[in-house]
Image 1 (cartoon, rainbow, N blue to C red):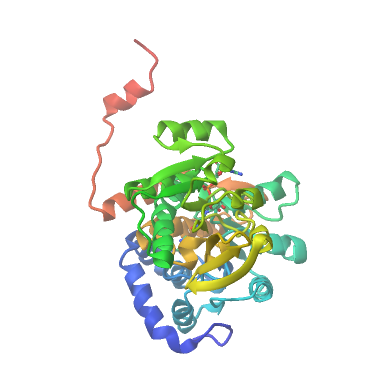
Image 2: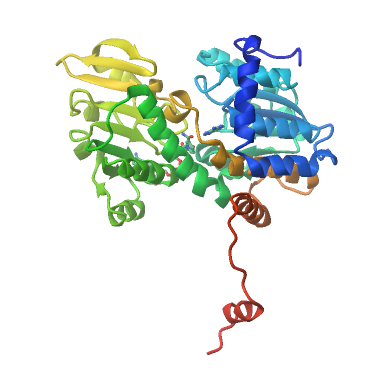
Length: 417
Ligand code: NAD
Ligand code: ADE
């Protein structure tokens, strides 16, 4: 047990340990990689500061980093996503955790500052708040940081902006952009866990409901498809004409949010953008409409607008706030507009995080193995790493695939008739 931590309750450790074991039994690729390098200690003397959702799956990742020799500091990447029992178990396992569910905004940034001040060699982030804080408040750390990783689309967008401005201080591996990450985590992970979060919060029937999904990126596709699978009539809104067309040809109804606002029973934002649902949309919504967000930050539904048009607000169930409007209509906001899958449910299932966090672990190892050779740029994960993770995942699922014959390789690389 480490003496450096700030969590809700160390006595919850036993429950957390059981959850972590459950996650481990569903994350065979990461556990296999952990074992493969545990003797070599590739992260010996490496200090890692991480800002990630403190879940049972994150526990499997940080325990792996520790097993590989790292000293790990961990803060939460959302004030409401921490699983307090898991945080307690991690402290018992020697991880320096600064996270609890229900942190205020000040506490959230305090914790991120705390892990930045640990003077890390490697910076792991989900959303970019830790990278942004180091760049704005602790730029002097840039010189000692070997590199960093970024878990999600929104974080990668922010880091690319820093790179464009020529201000990026250390190399970044965009873990989000690995095929074995976004094709599965963003799509199937968020798809399932968003439905899970909405159901745990509301317990309403999905069949027959009009579900409006804003954004048809990887996350939006997953959500739209899972709701369709449960019998919802799904409407997609988009700003990108190609993605909108794709949604049309995937069989969804596509329209503007101005049109969808009056029709939807459930609204789910998944854009990574701000002010996707604003007052003029709320003005048209049906009594009882439910609003949820799956994008990284709580800026997709304009909560200030919702507060402004409401005459009262009350919590009616865990993670459900009822806003009563002057005309008597009620709108329901889930999880305070934060990522509904992590606040009202447990985030992505372990099987999906197995690939995302194997990418994290191998990317951190890659940064150390290539210390001094990388520039302050945003890099994609090495292609071989992506293929390795896909191959190992299939293997652990007991699935074999065909191999190209020599004749087929030659045929595919030739132009001749
Ligand atoms: P993406 O870039 O693939 O898709 C975003 C889509 O939103 C794009 O097609 C874009 O055109 C569309 N869009 C932008 N502004 C819009 C607007 N005003 N109205 C309608 N559509 C709009 O990104 P992604 O990988 O799908 O990620 C989306 C968000 O989800 C990001 O914030 C990401 O970090 C987050 N994310 C959350 C989880 C989770 O566990 N909840 C997991 C992965 C990613
Ligand atoms: N992001 C989405 N789901 C997650 C999970 N289960 N653990 C950590 N980060 C996540």
